[in-house]
Amino acid sequence: MQLVSAGTRRTTTTPSGTMTTLASPTQGGATHPLWLVAMRPGAEGPLHAFEAEVVWSLTEGGGSVWVGGREERLTAGDTVVLAPGELRQFVAGAEGFRAVVTTVAPGRVTRGDGSDPLVPEWVA
Image: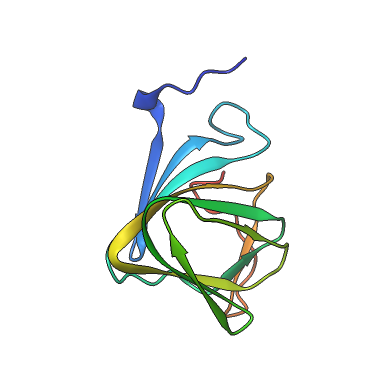
C-alpha cells in the first residue's frame, strides 16, 4: 500500500486550467495516474491525444469536448471515455468545470501541432 497524503499533492497550472495529481508513477507508484482538472469559465484546453484510453468524469460545472469535429455538451455527472489516439479539446462553460481524470502510465500525450509525445507533469 502507498499513501499519497493531501499535503503532498502536486499542482500544475497552465493557461487553460489547474491539474492536481492525486496519484501517479512518481506519487504513490500508481500505474493508473489519477488527477483533478479545474478549468476556469470559458477556458479552452489544447487539441491533444493520449496514447492510451482516458476517462474524464465531470464533478462540477459544465462545458464541452470536441472529438472528430463533433461537439458533445457536458454537465456535472457526465463521464467521457476517450479512445487511444483520439484528438480532443475540452472547453469550459460559463461556470467552468471540475473533473477527475485517469489513464494508464506512462500517459504520453501528443498535441494537435505535431510536436513530440510527452508525459504531462500531472501524469508523471
